[in-house]
Length: 254
Image (cartoon, rainbow, N blue to C red; front, side):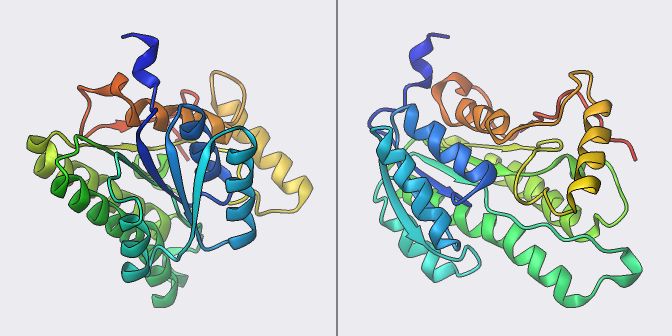
């Protein structure tokens, strides 16, 4: 495959969760590949920082201050793309609680953001791609949590498992129209979402996760962003309904 398979010049991408972490890394990398990037997030200061960095590097960024759980607001933002070629549905939140202590409101909030927010993004992008006969690429964000159980992972893992099912189902429905749908299921990635503990405890957790990888380290947002770029580009033209796992070789047993 030629290097220019990663050239996204003249294409428009929409990235949710673009204010920080994996979402920001994806927005930056897609812009560096030449795409016009519509950045969406609820975190307005972080969103502005991402857009400013893209512009400082010579790229084109269009920020959208939107909550992915607001279907109407998200629809308006995606429609502003007019002709989206790429949807990267990255936005997500973390919640951890034992099964017996999980409250309805905990489950509802995680499902709203991590599953419904992805569903809405996929629906709105796919509708526009179909309307304009765009042979586009939709990339969803799953998690290594879909492969194993683990203490406290009920809400998060269930939502991400639903994303996997959404990805595979949508791939079968829009594939005949030339639209590809794939997911990325990262391992432990160093982001603001995983940096939730005091310094000493955080260092111990990251050291444990690094020891589980044959590569001897945890992941960085850019490791995931490169997987998203691959799936968004023509380099993955024969891939759909797949789950790509940038996890450092970790099967993630507990």
